Image 1 (tube, rainbow, N blue to C red):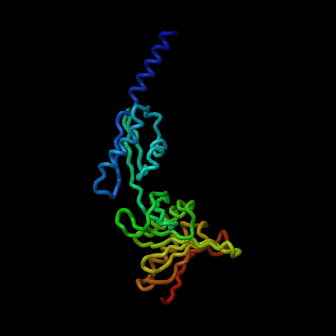
Image 2: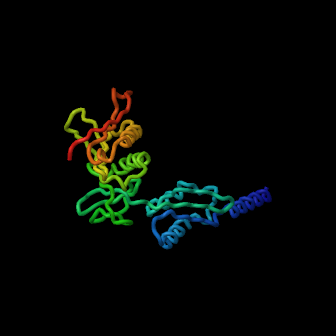
Image 3: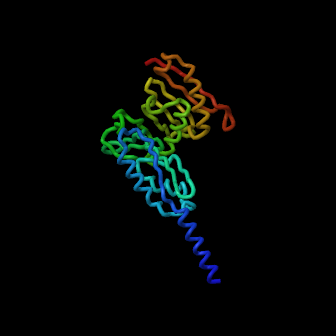
Length: 242
């Protein structure tokens, strides 16, 4: 029995040594020309997994380790017996929320990045998209909807100046609206924005594509549902003189 226990322990130790993490390859997706320091820091941060069994290192574990950095985990791969490949994407500064003394700046996922006295993007010094009418706790929700907008329109920060949440609690039956102000002048209004959001944004994009250049200088495209909860989603454009 003792010999069997010794052999079992030897096998366990051998397996542990074979599957211990020895190599962690890190790839950074970044806009910076020189990212040497970031790469060194990322490798140092992830070195906590060296020596751990590759069997028990998960994607969630790696994501937790880097969550407070300027990068987010975009790809995780195990190469048995002892190598982990990690790709980290730079958190892209995208949104600005006005607060006392300046702005709180957020990445494309609505997660806080930094505070600043002015709304100027750290990479290109151009304004970030200012989000209006919301609290700090709503940034991730608004960012998720903005991500849907980006998917449909093909871009976001380059064409949108502000995103405003229009709520009127004092008005009975008023449906909350989300308004995207585009740099060209037109506004995109998503009526009752928590219902059928994706479909409404797709509908307003389809309507946007029908407009000529002059029409895009002003007016509103409204995305809404017709006929109650099970009604059809529609979009229409109304222009006005500036």
